Figure 1: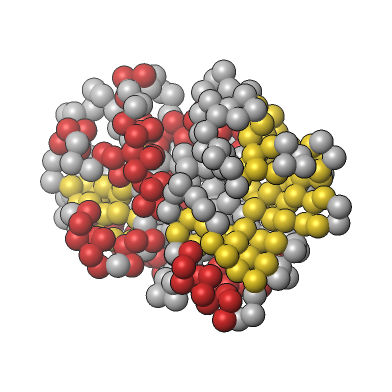
Figure 2: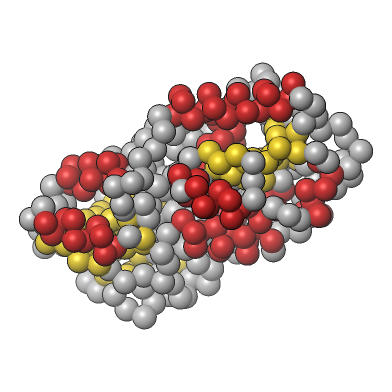
Length: 350
């Protein structure tokens, strides 16, 4: 670990560095893993659109296919699906017979907007542990979306618009892909619609959506579903929807106090991170006898793994999990001027 972040000395590259470096190998495009200012970026080919959008059109982004081996200064590097968001990857690094895997963020539950998590055998596994406590166990997908659809349908019957807040990259598209689009029209905040375009340009099938931007103040929103980033909560942008029912999709909604602090009517427990059983299963599947824990509940996770006989240690990070993703994403989303979104930019292709 260096002041710039995780560094492979033999290969001369950083993985998800915190400060500008010459060569950045990127697990995925969330702001706490992909920072602006690097000279060169390397990511997956399916992650190009979302990373390029977030790093800027001038960013030098190189790509590689999942599972393809490349050599960087004699070190073998490959990317493998992490199941987190579109293009997310675990980074496998092999040198002199020793294999490390940097997981980035990952989840092991199904998500049709990205490729499923793939266990990779290694000697050392660097795992996130955002939800690294036994209390975190996710609701089955079919139950989760049945609940969301029932909430939307009930709001429609009562003449209300349904607004669900979800991170603009990954979570929002997962919501869109899982809801029953026959219930009513779907609108999105500009920050979400911009990422929707990246997903569609990568070949991910999402239902038709419309941009809930300027000039729509007099529209009849009743019965519609609106997907917006958390930064839109309490903003003037929300006033156009009138008497809206609000919900927040997050793993933190499992904790009653989180929902209360967010001041929303409903909380849907949905995370793009692995829950406790998912973390334990993923770690075991790697066969690693050394585990480094980062991003989240490192202390409890390390103690638990050591009690199970593994060589486990915390790995320093400047970020502590989904709560920070939310704050950083809010900065990026707030910096997006909705006036920059052309009227039809986010419309679904016919």
